[in-house]
Amino acid sequence: MIVYRVGKTKWSNVLDGEGSRINGGRWNHVGDPCIYTSESRALAVLEYTVNTNIADVPRSLSITSIEIPEDIRDHPIPDLPGDWMDVPAPGSTKDLGSLSLKAKTHSVLRFPSSILPSEFNYILNPLHTNSAKFKIIDVRDFVYDIRIKWFKLLEKNKFVNSW
Image 1 (cartoon, helix red, strand yellow):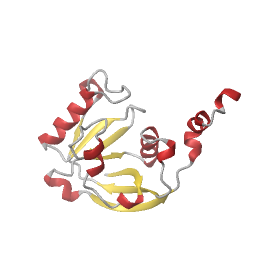
Image 2 (tube, rainbow, N blue to C red; image 1 turned 30 degrees about the vertical axis):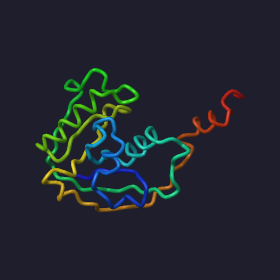
Image 3 (cartoon, rainbow, N blue to C red; image 1 turned 60 degrees about the horizontal axis):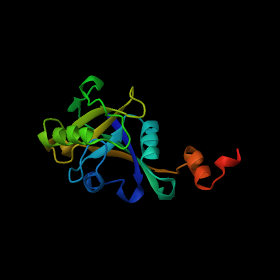
Image 4 (spheres, rainbow, N blue to C red; image 1 turned 60 degrees about the vertical axis):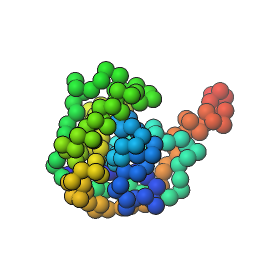
């Protein structure tokens, strides 16, 4: 299976989960490394968009395609905490993800996207013994089109009130 992630080009060939270890995310606590990926390039861009401020979008981005093993633990919606879609991400989702990562029963965790619940994100566990099977198969430059965040840009520059 192939999954995708959008990120700074300088980290596009790194699969150590260091960024999420430092910052945490919806499905992990700070201190627990993992790699956030999505089932499609489009979902990867959407996830990147909601998790990045317009001022922080770097000039040098890439989309990385990663081949993963079929060693996947599914987390269907009925098994998720009731607040799993909340913003900011609640502690309950961080608890669930971190516990699943630490259990090391699967190298990949599958969660529905909190933006589009019918699509899925795949959380890779770099500490799992199968992580050696994570294989970067393609890295392509990606130019972020700021029209995706146009409303936020307008709001920042106070153009919204002039509509």
